[in-house]
Length: 150
Image (cartoon, rainbow, N blue to C red; front, side):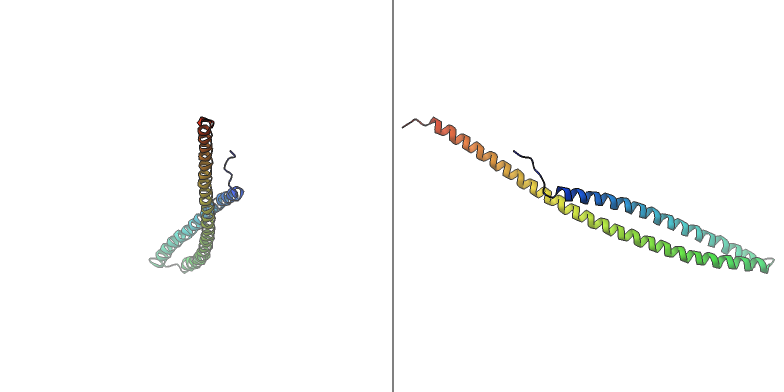
């Protein structure tokens, strides 16, 4: 009796490796996304702090040079925030693309695993059938030996 051998086993192993690689790639992309979001939060915190400083500079003793300096810095931070928001969107899009790729690879792997299981069940049925046939032949042989020679 030869063992069960799935004809697409190497293809299944390849899909499993692709899935592993895609999971690693997704993990790296998610870490990059979180890093970009963190940078955005830092910029937004700086904007909040600078906005408060600007309000403080506009009340009490007014110093035009300080107000102008804070206004320019605030505009710079707002520009940096826009750029960082674009970076976050770009990285989010990258994560989504990798996730879709991973889902497709997982779907293909699952199809192959289902096919393998189906073929294995067929193999078991065939083996059972062969075993039953051998038992039937043995019983038939033993029965024929018991018959008296006529």
